[in-house]
Image (tube, rainbow, N blue to C red):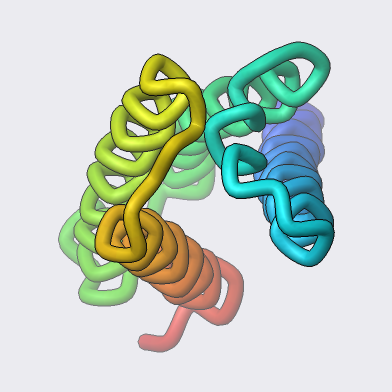
Length: 145
């Protein structure tokens, strides 16, 4: 039973890392955008903001491992609808996050110059990733039967 509590704490810390890292990057971009800095999004992959991206990556790796372990320890079936739905949403959200990271890296390499279309695609991917991961998190917390 104690290992289950440790897993829950690990899972909770990963959630805090993910939300905190995303909030930090969004705040940095928003502050730069308000100041008229067109390259603020591309600069979010430079130090110290790279640490926020690394924190998000670590939490995204920890989620499936600790989640599977918790399901195994509690004896739940992996075929439950809420668990399968949350897993599918998590996978789609992770894909959005990876594509977003690639787009932002291209902006960084290009010196931060971005067109309106590129900015909209990046914002759309970011919003989609946040909403999808939040929906997966909702499934995992509420456990609707």
